[in-house]
Amino acid sequence: MAAAVAALQQTTPITFQSRSPPLSQLHSKPTTRLSLSSNLKIPKLTIKPLLRRRGRGGGASGAKMADSAAGSYANALADVAKSNNTLDETSDDVEKIEKIFSDEQVVNFFTNPTIIEEEKQKLVDEIAKSSGLQPHVANFLNILVDMKRIDLIKEIVKEFEVVYNKLTDTQVAIVTSVVQLESQHLAQIAKEVQKLTGARNVRIKTVIDPSLVAGFTIRYGNSGSKLIDMSVKKQLEEIAAQLELGDIQLAV
Image (tube, rainbow, N blue to C red; front, side, top):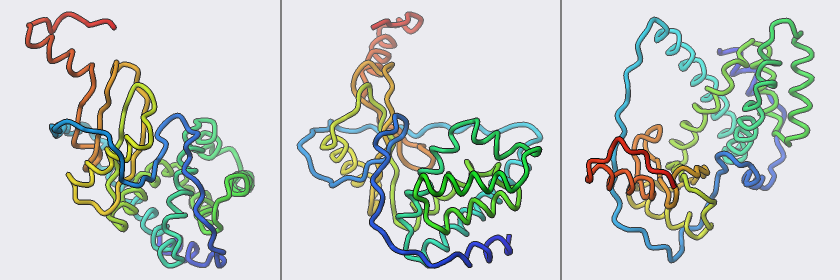
């Protein structure tokens, strides 16, 4: 790991550029950076912590080791970004990487042991060029290929977001709705989450879910541990429970 960090820190100097725009064209989990001002009225919010299930089985030790390795790589990348004063830009690049590696064909290519390292590094170069990745981020991907740890990329992405949020005092809120909400409504939601958490910054990620019927839900906190449910689906479920119609499935 020390060798990986040292190699990452030897990347060429970076020319600072304006931040790339949010990936608003993506259907799943676009990130919105917002100014906190609008006229949307939000009723009194009820916060419900989610219960966590404890894992079972003999794979827990291996999972912890993978998490530890992913966290180490994520911290190394964050350290380089801080030293280059490109933490926000690096966060944008990590979001691009997350999108790219959501394609299973890409994952299978990089994790295929029969494909030589040079071919994988060639694809990294193509990805870096087409996505406009910063040199140190492209170098980071090449290090993962070289050390045969590219299989950890999804975990590294998650860990980097945790590190980034801590460094910038940022709270992530996932807003799920039937249709895309207007930016002013998302801004008001961000403002309410900021009040609830006391965070300096709030980043909104949006998800579309037609099953909610109408309204929206908000998840925030540690790994989405807190829930604000303002959906019509939830209201219908509560009405059904009050009328002892829990076994009846409501069709809309």
